[in-house]
Amino acid sequence: MNQIRQILDNLVKEIQKTEEYIHFIEAKKEIENYPDKVMIANDFRAKNFRLQTSDLELFDEMDDLEQEFASCLQDRIIGDYLKAELELCNIIREINCTIIEPLEIDLEFVE
Image (cartoon, rainbow, N blue to C red; front, top):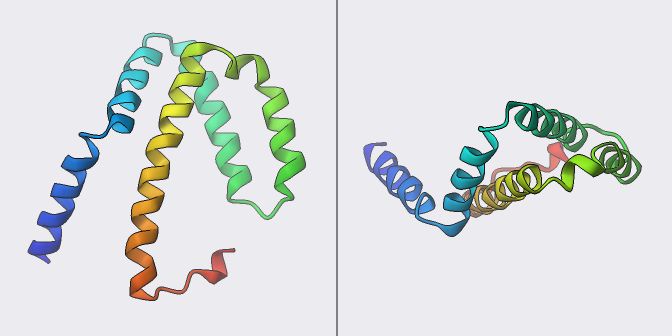
């Protein structure tokens, strides 16, 4: 397990060197200067997360969510933060898939 821990530590260090991570940290620092924008972004993130993990028909619900937050998402600081977070999450998702697939872990029950 120590070898795996070392590999994971190295992976984290490599992720922290990526443009996506650096952009995320910069966007996070910027939005933290505006508590009201943090609250809006967190509200959007929470509602989006609930939708993504629910059994609801996502197309209509996502449209409703985007309409609800349309003006907020056009705010440069909020939009930049959410986009940067999504880009970082995409990297993490790709890493997870790369690990899980060859280990033959069955995740079909999640779908």
